[in-house]
Image (cartoon, rainbow, N blue to C red; front, side, top):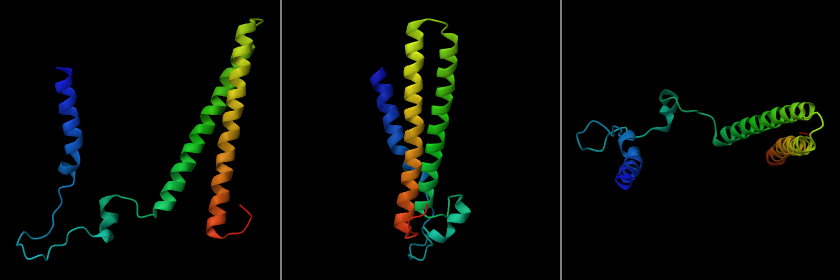
Length: 130
């Protein structure tokens, strides 16, 4: 029974693009004078009209911000664990290792941001200042 449900789910998942991409190709007269897909109508579709480069850059900046925020939250939690440990050596070791991991996370997030800006300035020919 599970295999049948899984098979139906996969079939619907694979067939989904066919249902959502139903698009008018013209007047239906068969003369080939239909409008079809026109890239200039992207504004009316709700899609972004920005270049793919800007979308990827915004997505990476968003991911780096989330990653850095999670690392800082983890650092605060590990600091609270260190304060609450009150002499428990195992908990102190665990809190110190968590702090180390969070510091590494912050360093990785910031270095990722610096690398993205350096590549952006190198590819755009803006010079060495980023």
